[in-house]
Length: 172
Image (cartoon, rainbow, N blue to C red; front, side, top):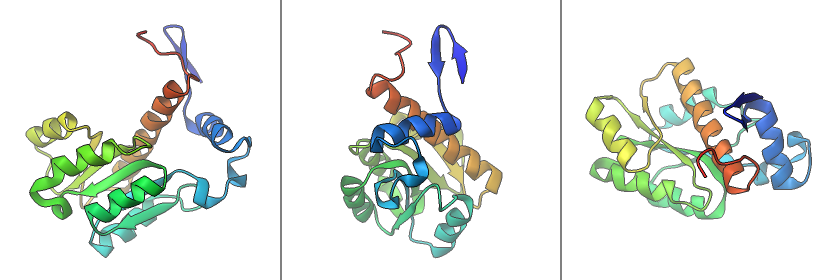
């Protein structure tokens, strides 16, 4: 656990244990049924992309659900808590920024990653303006994908702790 400017930042396994305890009342995350664990949602149509993401995410730790349309993904987001949503820019076409905004406003307030073959600065800026967290280039390197997904979870976890009063707010 790191201490900065008088408040504690928790992440990694300790942060996960705190979250699971709050979610289930149990100190053991492995005791939590898969259906109750927060999951990652991939909104992709391409089976190869879904399979690649399955290779990045440890299934025993993080359930990965795949939706093949924005509407199906949003419907799932109303039914289950997602920490991270990965949206294929090609699937959302010209409406990708609207999709990012809509996913970031789901009840679980997931962190949204945009999957795109391009990474121009104006795309990064627009993604940030509509509530997205990061751009994930595809085809991607596994280490980059893991870092983006894990970084998204850390951000989501800290935001959850702030929302539940478990982490003091640094500016209030």
